Amino acid sequence: MSPATKELFTKLRMMVPPMLERFHKGQLGRVAVIGGSENYTGAPYFSSMASARLGCDLSHVICTPPAANVIKTYSPNLMVHPIMHESTFASPPPCSAIVPKIVSLLSNLHAVVIGPGLGRDALMQDTVAEVIKAAKDVKMPLVLDADALWLVQQRPELVRGYKECVLTPNVVEFARLAKAVDAETQDTGMEGCKRLADALGGVMIVRKGEHDYINNGTVSCIGDLEGGRKRSGGQGDTLTGSIGTFLAWRGTYHEGLWDTEGDLDREETLMLAAWGGSCITRECSRQAYKKRGRSLQASDLTEEVEGAFLTLVGEKEEGSKL
Image 1 (tube, rainbow, N blue to C red):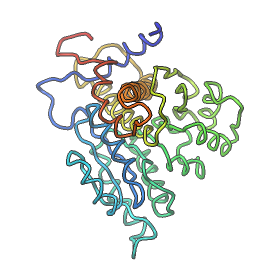
Image 2: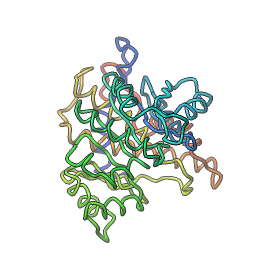
Image 3: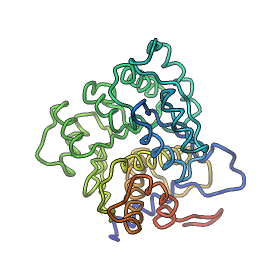
Image 4: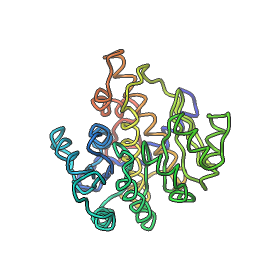
């Protein structure tokens, strides 16, 4: 492990809350995943379970009623809200009737992940567009992936200049986003990442790939820990859920919920949250691949989240200086 990586882990540990007797339910993270449609139920589950397994106290899924019925059978640990609707449903309510129900939940959350299993249905897309606007009004940290990135591609003004937002495109999604905002480049590494971040006004970009390039135009780092070699679908959902929990912990760090160390600013901790999610996902992939090889599936990463955290970050007790 390089000296630079060791330094990043030292800083990341500063914003991971210790397990203290005085904490109560919800203080160590309340994260919601918005997605889950009739055809896509796995992605929001993998994202929210990664969030929970990493250590978030309360994990919510906001999805459509058909998706909710399925996701509830996956795990009783998740709070599933069947609020979203697709335009293909019989007599769907208008967007104006759906959005307030979701917005009413924001005040009880630390971070929101948007995109896993969302799909491109017009009503679903319009709904999350309005939710993004409302989240910005209350300075809610956001993680956007999958078809939420497609929405940004169509309407970049939704996130442009919002510096509490993390986008997690793969190489193909990255190229589409760059084209949409006139930031096309042959460089899909750090320079290309910076170019896209600048074009979006300082949004944090996590360009997934062999290495994860993380840049908001000002601060940057690389997620280059060893991962597994199997590229099964759904592994990016572990990333979004993990980033969601780190963003929640970031909030508690800046609130001074415990006797915190260091004096990290909000821009640096946003980068650390993105980088921490990258590291956890890569270690999950490495551990799962070691056990499963080419049969590895996204669900195998979920089972490795706790082990990845203990391997990379570790626990600290009250009064300790991990």
